[in-house]
Length: 565
Ligand code: HEM
Ligand SMILES: [Cu+2]
Image: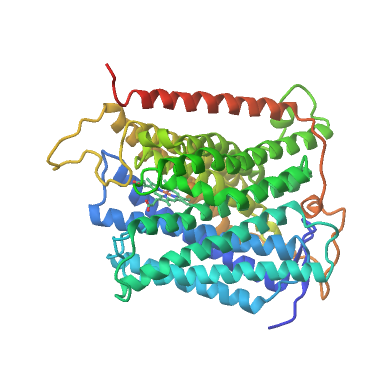
């Protein structure tokens, strides 16, 4: 392998090591391809759940739904996260990538795994959904693909850790690692745990699919599968929150309000994430109510607390930075005068608000043992998690991409006018999509059932008319969101193919220390700003009131499930 060279980007001051740069590019591009496939499949899913369209036949629907879930939640997210890990280590710390050859091995394993899994799904006998619960069985290649992908991702995490060691040894930064890198470390630590849990449960299931193991117990499967499934979501959250901090630093020069508090909040994720995975077992027999309540109603709140800290300190840091620039009028001038036309910022902010209000509040509601009963296995559940993984993570990744097009890919963005509206179209239609799904779920529309009217069933079920209406709106919101996703793909792929080539900047054989004048220097350093963010405080109170109201409304719904008179 050629020796590394270092390019200093003239637009951002960031320094890209040559191997790391290529790896970020291939991982990010592969991620976007997965998003494209998952997005095309979303059309099939949405047009089937839209009652008056009801497009696909049952077997096709479940196949398409399985592939949609896996291509989106596993392949799109994790390929992109690999690029983020290399960025947060090699680029932010300005050092070489530890073992580029191994990083390529990781990428190839992941790619082969992703293709193998997709082929298995589209051959038709692996429509076991993303959660793939036993005793449902998929083809051996389905599990094998996931295992190869996971091994690749694990290797990638170790390359990331190795790169941190290189930076430390070569003294490429001073003091503690920057907060964004710290967040990425959190994500990578959680990833190692996640992948280990995945291996513990998927390897026996693979062996069962080839006939070596006789049986995998369904309850054990679900418990361990969710140690994997839940913590993988915590990786996404740690990754997208790191990106929020990075965007606040890049777009505003905003320093965290308190580095210590923010770092502490990341640590809470590592400490409490496992306990929270009990919220996926709330309707399961075999685990005691006391265990469920303690885990989901007490320990889970520490992880929620961490997200709320980030949700407060990031807008707070932006407010402080904006006020320092003179946007001091009233409570909200700082926010009104934010760069709403810049998709890096608007994407990040729409993501933050939607993740908190829609994903966060609904998550706490669903995670309450008693309330869980009203929405368990209804379409409320995908309503909730599209607010977290799509509005939260996917939209943050999109926002970061707009920053990376000129900086990493060295291209001028094509069609900036479209890029300006893309986060609004995608983000706001996703808000709507999630809300109407949650509405339909509250009325009881089941999750994953291909035909909500249950036509041909022995006993009829009369839905309130609103349920059909809401599912129709799910269709409309979904199509609008898919259009927003298509714009993102058009803009990013188009920029790489046809965008004007930009000058790459000076290349040297050695790394250089972080120049304090670089526009991104704040993202690469340690620093706190004092608390002077009254506007953010008001926003936090609005959040709190919505939270409390919504929570109690659901207790009221619960009380109406069984009439006592
Ligand atoms: C415009 C974008 C999207 C639309 C319109 C959309 C729509 C849907 C719909 C209607 C369902 C089916 C609900 C059901 O009947 O059970 C679904 C399932 C799912 N979606 Fe999406 N989705 C989108 C993007 C995403 C993204 C970006 C992710 C992840 C990052 C994602 C992850 C999932 C998962 C994991 C499932 C569940 C699959 C399963 O039950 O096995 N979706 N989506
Ligand atoms: Cu969970």
